[in-house]
Image (cartoon, rainbow, N blue to C red; front, side, top):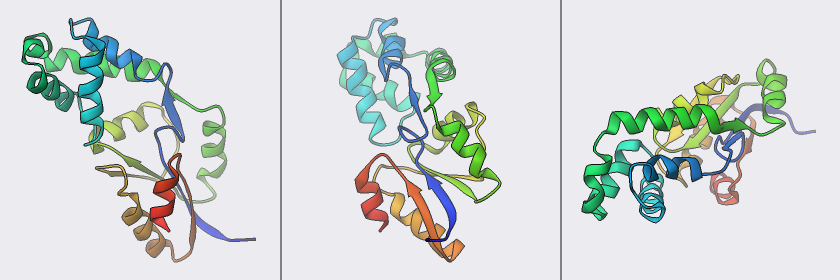
Length: 171
C-alpha cells in the first residue's frame, strides 16, 4: 500500500458545483437587460483569467458598449453574485463526508484555479474542513503548487482533480 502524507483537492467540479451551472449567474446580468449570449461571453472571458464580477463587467462594457450603463453598479451586481453563490454553490454528495473523515488524519489542501479572493470566499462559504487553500490564477498552473506540496511533505500526495490535464501536468 502506498503511503501518502497529504491530500490535495481541486474545488470547482471536484468538491463542489453550482446547481444549474452558470444559468443563475447569467440571470443576474439578464435582469439588467444584458442578453444571455453577451453575459456568457463576458463570463467566459473573465473565467479564463480568474473570474471576478469586475472583470465580467469590464468585458461587457468593452465588447458591448451599449450595455455598459446597465452594468455600471458593480456593488449591486456583486451582492447579487454572492447571493447566488450562497444559494446555489453546493457540495457533491460525498464531499462533506470525505473531508470530515480525512481532516484530522492527513492535511487537506485545496488547490484551485481562479481569482484568489473569489475562490477563497466560495470555499469558506461552504464551511468545509481543510488546512490550506492554494488559488492559482489560471487553469493549467496547478503543477507548480503540487510540486511545492511534494517537496514540503517529502512523500506521495493524493491529488484529485476533475481535469485530467491538471493531473498530467503535476506528474
